[in-house]
Amino acid sequence: MAPRHQAPRGTRDLLPADTRLWRWAEARALQVLERYGFGELRSPMFEEYELFARTAGESSDVVQKEMYRFQDLGERDLALRPEFTAGVMRAYLEHGLGGRARVHRLWSMGPVFRYGRPQKGRYRQFSQINAELVGSAAPGADVEVISLFVDLYEAWGFRDLTVLINSVGQPASRRAYGERLRELLAPFAERLSEDSRRRLEQNPLRVLDTKSEGDLAVLAELRESGAGLPRMIDLLDTDDRAHWDQVLAGLEAAGVAVEIDHGLVRGLDYYTRTAFEVHDRSLGAQSALGGGGRYDGLIEMLGGPPTPGVGFAIGLDRALLVLEERGTAPPLADTVCVVAMDSTRAAAQALVRRLRREFPVEADVEARAFGAQMKAAGKSGARLLVIVGEDEWKQGVVALKDSRTGTQQSVAVDRLADTLRGLLSGQETQGGA
Ligand code: HAM
Image (cartoon, rainbow, N blue to C red; front, top):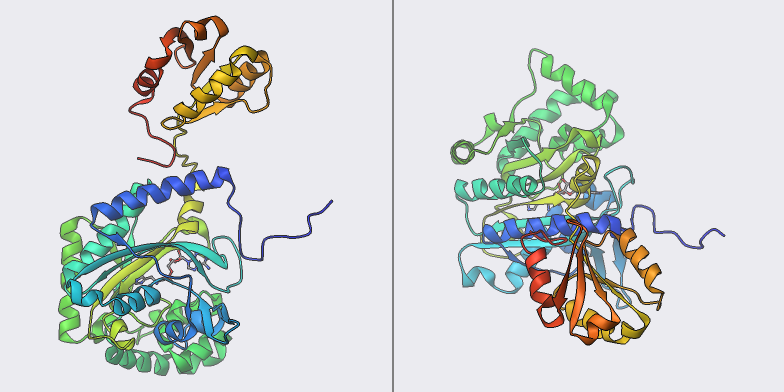
């Protein structure tokens, strides 16, 4: 019989075989974030619609076509968060964090929602790891954030990642750049996609972010023409240019490989100065594994005092798709299986419960015969077998079999936990290390 319900389009269930990798990746990420001195901020999954509309930019795809906007029963205009940054900054202001310390390092993790067309690596509910360094305008802050960004991927086993980087300047220099692009692209308007024609009107920089083949051909033609495509970094003012140079020098000093990408613009409008992304070609069209940048005007936009900030978000679904394809599998924790006889079943129950305070323990729940339990233990791949025999139990001992070495020993029940600890120590537990 076909099931009556399916997960909504663009959402996925992660089954235990999937969540094992997720938990491992999350635990590794958490270690790196803590080493960088970041603290966790948890904000609500929905906020006032206006918060996102104001910060992401009215002309951005996120606001124009991807928002899960709804009215609650009190007729409030709300939206599921399409990203973390706006909510984190709202919380930063609401709790007066700026008055408590000059610089804050904040991370968040969890689901975000965008109503896009689902495809490989693109979902309507997906997860991000988000990090923000709020309160410093120094190039060193950009360098630290980009180093953290790269170190997170490296903790998952990614090697030789190239971070694409650009400067998107300030609203004024960006406007001048946009005007220049609009003039250059106007003669080609007929050949551009509908999306790009709209962007040409509302936010010409975003044309550079197009995925349409026809648009890309126009851009390539323009790049190779005599005039060429103008570069944003050539229109930066002196301070922005100095910031850019220092960020590049800092990244080099830190040993972070970057590649300048003059076409990198990002999909959200709040960025100033540094913008960066990392891609993995194996994902096809949805190749961005993560991205971020500086947003020095964002907090003011929300009614706060001028406060610079820089941060990023990593798309966990995409990063983990790549890891899965590469066969990355977190090590399975060694488990203990307790096998009892009919006569020792009750005693074994208390033993199992005690051992589970410390070790992963499997035990029969169906009062199966000894032979069936031994068979199940062999199948489950448990490393250590604790056999609670009747005579042994009366003498205060159990048999302990190590399937890795094939050895068996008799262990006093009150020494059992110490012995197991000794045998299992030094290994990574599931989701840990
Ligand atoms: P974003 O580039 O919009 O940045 O999203 C970051 C990452 O989320 C993307 O690189 C991608 O891996 C993942 N992502 C985006 N949309 C989807 C989707 N539909 N399905 C699966 N994964 C997706 C931001 O969200 C900014 N808030 C980052 C930031 C933080 N900038 C400063 N601070």
